[in-house]
Length: 484
Ligand code: TXE
Image (cartoon, rainbow, N blue to C red; front, side, top):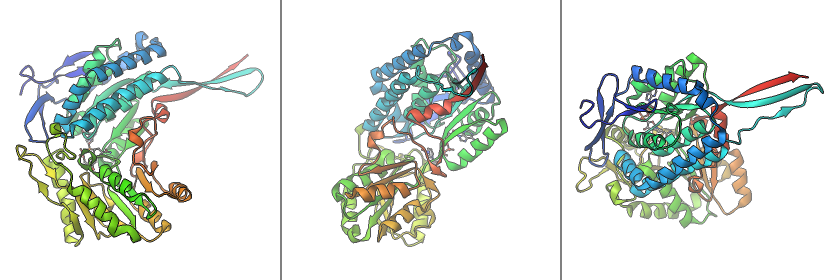
């Protein structure tokens, strides 16, 4: 499809543009693989334009003099426009990613909350005065880093775009967003909302396209001052290498293999509800998915029955019908999951539920997977160690607290851990020894709280997003010493 034949446009320097080559890429609805839109296939030349506009705007008198409280007001405006169009955004997200519409609605609300939260911080980025000598006034200033690049994955596009760009703009940076090639629609919608506000042109830019083309050009661009990346470990490593060439800081969020540790003294029904919820949300395509269940041996059988009956009662279907479980993103993702399941079969693991593609009437071309629970895996097997990114739960048991901690920490990742126990002392002991960026006790995710710093240990990445902590990503510190 050529530009002008219904193809969407990218948002660069406050203008809607085709790609320099006029090529497009099709966007499919994961539920039935129908093409629902076409977006420009941005490449290096387009990235050049976007970074150039972001740089010029960053250095412009208008943006340099833009008062912090005014930045906050604009971001609040963006939040209220997201709320105004929340239903449209939720539908776009569901059509783009396949997720159940109620989860799309939650994502739209979270996006609005990110803008509100960081709007409130825009005029509270403070420095310090540092005592040195009586005749020296020493102070620090937190300055924006400049042009920030945001590489967005396909699982939570509107949320992840909002969480990093809101923090970056609040602190006075300009941004270039590269949405995932499969799910660019809500990123472009966000640009439409930005355009309705008094945000100077060129502060918020979106270049659509493939990772290996537009993404690669963006992370290598010498005029980019910071990269925020959420995605796979492999691509994260490539992004890190690109950043090293320009010696710029990056924030990496690379997924996980997060455990729920269930002790026998926990409220088992409550824990079972959450164990299931945490692994089926967005069809398991969540960086913080609770993809491993570690359960105390004495209650293993009874607990597994509880989880199993919940898994078997889940409704699978088209996201707009708001089932419990939608399709996975694409054939590629489905085949990736299948490869893991085949390895588990070869290793004679036991499938307690699922393991097969689910056929949904009217959505025969969609890739739906039955919620899957696998037992008897070697904790060091590939399936137990690597991120599968589907509704697949691996089950292990432990005899005591020490063994639970060892199992929990025994993967290359460390993003989130759930601990289920009524013993407060044990809860804190375990939380202290767990090597993950977030630990939830008797809950999982605390409602997604945008105020809580989020990020990983080990191969889950580094740097923190969300909360006040994220503001550090987008500011750099200057010390000024004045001799009087
Ligand atoms: O990820 P990629 P993919 C994990 C999950 C999933 C696997 C593969 O396990 O199954 O990764 O997914 C852009 N330079 N996660 O292949 O490649 C790309 O266009 C710059 C976990 O989709 O990491 C997209 O915008 N950018 C995760 C983004 O990187 C590049 C979320 C993510 O794509 C690029 C997604 C390059 N060379 C996948 N190559 C999480 N942490 O939540 C690609 N991109």
